[in-house]
Length: 362
Image: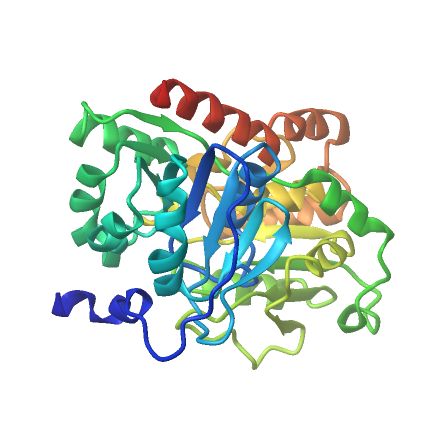
């Protein structure tokens, strides 16, 4: 287990173990094991767990950051954030099982496969999100352990069909909380944008090796009257600091983000084309569109044929698409885009997941 030593502390009780009564009256329980903290870059796991909690499931979201003094925080009556995973396994999971409840374990980090039996699950769902090289060694063991697999993109779905044809699997892309991002238009202009009267070109998300940094720099140099804003975590790569109109605003929490997007002119997805990006279904695309902004993206499979998303096959085309939007020659197609968005809410995603799981559990 040396390979998993970075995870062992999440499953070993140390010092004081806080207790607390958590169990509700619902028959089905969903547990999300420690992967990403609830308050860090609210993404698919948090959205789907919230949907479970709003639709009659008892949900336990286990934070990766651990505490020896606090067992949980309540988000709503059916959703608890667990701060001590090992105590939860020791004190709460046995009570859930004693009451005869069904435990659904929702997993999105394949490396956790070695620890999943500790939750005594009745059904293991592997939510296959990304094709990261670091996760590849754990994919096989995770898929073998899972009862069902959910994929987020066509590439990942095709991989499951090819390599694991007997494993029950469906594709459920990402979605959006449309109203939250629409309401951002009523927010005051963020302070970082108040000193700028020209166009705002925005990128939101992890700043990592899959971002074409040279392209972003070219955008800033080409449109010197625009402010190019970068929001998100620097994930092993630094945002350039040497270009005056390229501004790194840091990580914004989920509730701040709509104001920044709504006060942008254009939103961008400047990804390089590689195995990671061709398999990703970018949540940022949905959030950009829900904010009413036209999007310019490199040619990723999952952004094709989406209204108000303008695809560029190279850097010159990317620059030209931005220019055409700024000149008013192309832009946000409101009626068509809003109609498309209504079919891509987290509520619609949950409905598909729930129907699938109900069939599996029967």
